[in-house]
Length: 151
Image (tube, rainbow, N blue to C red; front, side):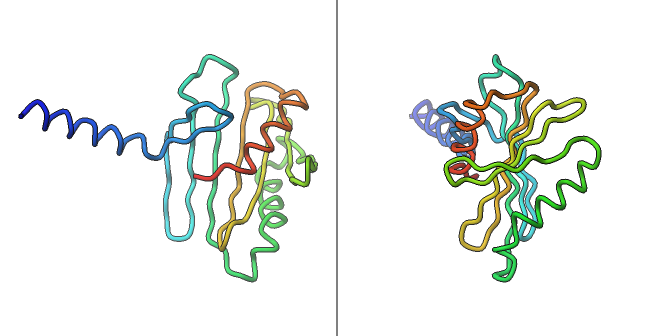
């Protein structure tokens, strides 16, 4: 009986630990960190399989007043470009009606894809950072996946 109870407790704990992990492009990603505050959150996901090109997936969630929902992407991109300064210049693109931006960095991280969405009263900035330049076909697949991805 003790072994059965211990096994159930262990299984329950494992389910709790992995409940925030997500699937992205058919691969499992671990929630590496989450910074939560009132109306704002920043999630960092890392692939469990780290054998490929090093990359990270960040999602920033922000509660928005109704008057800001339509301006979310424009305001967020202005803030991001100001933060990046001379690191890179955001390039705005559209693929299958999904608006997104890319950034080729001068040093460090080589390529970033930004997809911004709103859902109900929240804005989501989904940021994929790669250590290598991403081919256009791969970029398009990533954009489609980022558009559907939520923490």
